[in-house]
Length: 116
Image (cartoon, rainbow, N blue to C red; front, side, top):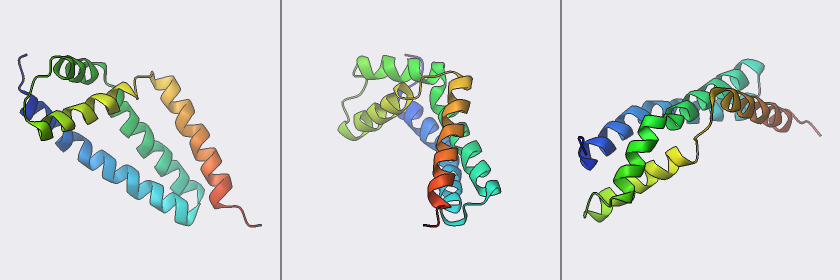
């Protein structure tokens, strides 16, 4: 393995942190505002986050390290496992990501804008 587990985990966490924050903030704004603009921002942020985890190279590297039990440190092993599982759960093409985020945005808009 050309990259250490520690550097792989660190680089992955640092790369996903701003995407995760943007996704969570956009989702919150969509839930409290329900405007079409907020829903679109949430959909775009979710798609960006999902594309990050759909990266096949990141998934392959996480899988190799996870399967090889490349670290004895239990905390680092847990972080690696979470990265591996996040990447594994998001292995899909761009068209699927676009469709999923569109459908989820539509459902969320109906829910947050319901005025019974």
